[in-house]
Image: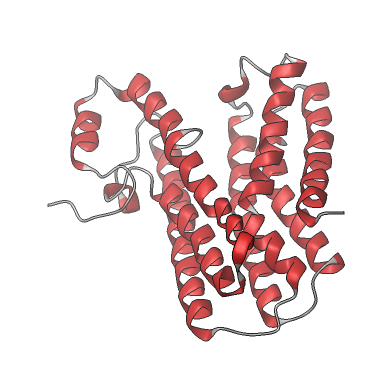
Length: 253
């Protein structure tokens, strides 16, 4: 079977299982958990079935899994505190609407993982030090930025639950966590880049897809809209929006 179709079927099966649980129990607790678990379980499957213990495959495997474990832990802790995810208020009771979300989530994971699916099924036997080093630096920078931003937001919300965070990394970017996540996937893509040729360059649609998704669809636009509705009439928010970059961090004078 084609490795990309095989990966899509595996991720779809994982999300179908969690959809059945979520729809039956009318719960949001497993929603984000299933997202990160999809990355972890698919990576484990690819490593065991299609890859071998070469250094590059292991590096990429652990890069994906460490990112997913950290993000999954953060999201699970958050939903256990919140109990409900209001994104699904108009979908939770609809089999079709709620099911469509899980299908789109499965497709998203499959597309984002394209470079990793390619590498873990092609068993690279050559190491390219320059791209490996640059890619790992980019991955590490993204991992640290995303982790730090999430930790800062979580700590801030414990003290100021009704206020928008504007301190720490959030002082230099309105969405530093998303910026970090983009760096993670572009870093892994850079590690994989030397092994691509011909049509295999199409797997770079993975980092392109997650970047566009966060910039224009499910990430930044939804949060910006939510913030405007909640904080739009407050002066500190208006000043924050005016001075702080949307995504790429920079020092504010």
